[in-house]
Length: 133
Image (tube, rainbow, N blue to C red):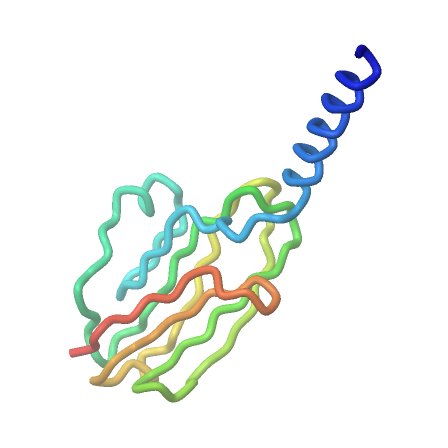
């Protein structure tokens, strides 16, 4: 009986360990798309997602990444009216959490619908869409 109990407990422990090592697609704590950037955690957490962006002004994606080791690369893709206009990859500079700020230059921010996707490798972690007025 003790052998069976030990075997069951060992199997359960192994499943917990394997599940925790399986990766995490929920590494984005906060993502704000706005005409201003937020590079400090306290500012990003206090910010609210605007309902729209202003044309001919730079747009920024401020992304708070958690549970991610230093050097992990995240890619952002910007689309205007369903046409990809920019792709940029940045790596985290801090261990466990970091804020990555991506910029879309003012000349690319025109009236229409902006869609932003944040990727880790080939996995879309978050998608946001906003009108630009």
